[in-house]
Length: 247
Image 1 (cartoon, helix red, strand yellow):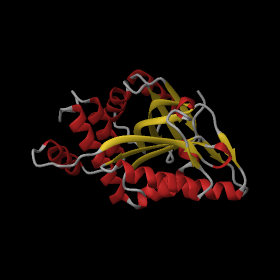
Image 2: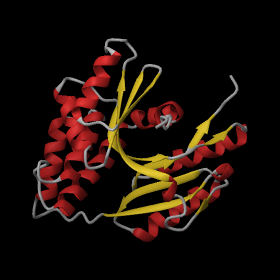
Image 3: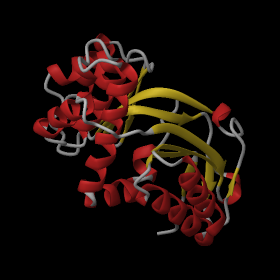
Image 4: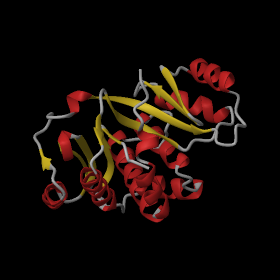
């Protein structure tokens, strides 16, 4: 499987997220709360959704104390948080497929905001299923080897031994793919081996890509992503755009 170029083409938005670490932690905390409530268990060994949320939290360098407090809060009788998961699908410039995953306590509010974000920069909100058919849900683990401290063959062998389905190497980035059900097992095994993750979560991986070359299209696509990611209710934005800029 060809690498889905997530890391290379969305570094700018990832960097923006890192610059707003507090917002990132808040969003991950919301995922943990929903995972506890919907999974009905605070033990990640018995709640795969919670285990996946914890893996994502750790890859974002969320402190263990924060994770623990969030789980305790979610399981407390006084917790009145009432979030629901909702997904929107639509199109960006040149027909780029976009999936927006949100957790909200006000479905009407987030629907209006998502529609506005699409409309403002040349996109449009579609119907359920209009683009999700062209994505595969996979566990994706990103490992950085910028300092060349990792042996390529060793990483490949360890990932496959842990149960990974596929591995792609893009310059100094290892992209490790798993099934959604195998994500927790693989990420846990690699973590126990001492690997540090740039990112580790369940993602929507596009089956094909749309290349954006026109500066106006690139600007509009970037704005759509930034607006979505800046929204407190939106957890993740997936798309199949590949940005090709003239340098």
